[in-house]
Length: 154
Image (cartoon, rainbow, N blue to C red; front, side):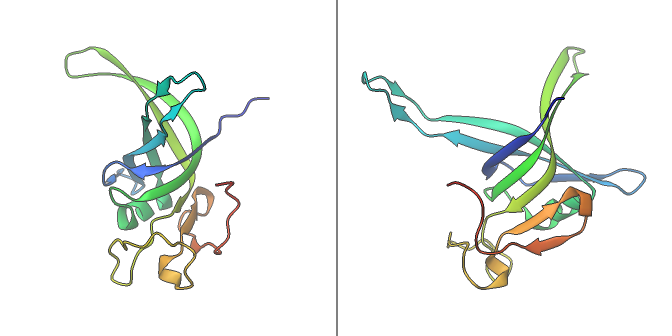
């Protein structure tokens, strides 16, 4: 038995690029940044902050949701699988890329009533427009606000 599961909590690096296949299926791609905080070891050695960039790929209903609602700087929680592939660039050199194929995501950036980013980071407000939205890849277009509590340990 094997498991290929990735969980990321980070900030969107650029607006999603969405394309539609001839069959009408939407595919969205964008980057997500996760950052490990800087810290100091017991012996005084300082370890600097480190940011990792992840290439996300979303299909069908998740891609359509990303196109409508996700913008650069938004905070996202995603679950998915790691996929690696190679391709030949314009010069003919072989390039390798690792992507996260997203199965589930939660948008954690509050939105105010006009759809623009809200400066407030209080997700637990009672107004339904500012609660995070959970989207599951299996249900394609099933977008539902989460409750104000979550199971995240942080």
